[in-house]
Image (cartoon, rainbow, N blue to C red; front, side, top):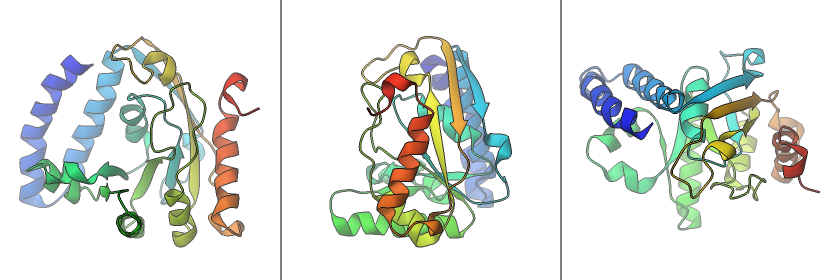
Length: 230
């Protein structure tokens, strides 16, 4: 997979970056980036089965909240999201020449958890992205689980959902932990299942804690029994 990306990414950049900066349109670069990511996972021997995606209204804007156990999760999940999606990216990456400019064009959201004001600014930027009709995809634990069980959720995504009223789609990813768990560089070929649960309307909950619990139960329901909370 890494060898494939080492060849494909520069080729995609040669085409995508000039087009984006000349036209001001991100569509081609986004398509090249997501297709390259997806192809890399498939080259590594990963087969993907998808549930529930066809039942979503692809014309609507959603916040996709997923579990996270492997570096394979983003290149598998993001290309599946209908239309375009934004993601949270470490603010330091926006300082990289050309790449940072492209990420801004793509409406990616810089995240900085160093203090409360920076976190609030990230949430405001994410809310503006949603108002533009662009989806948000967030790995809600904030880091990869070492054993496949759900870690405590970050609170920010639930503030975002309650503030904007955008429906939340819980997502459960299965199989990436076995293929490439945290701390291992090699990839074991296998099957990954991505389950898109039905959207949840945040307006029916009185506070973010209730919404968080509902989302957690839904994501956890897609995990094997041994990985669910007792």
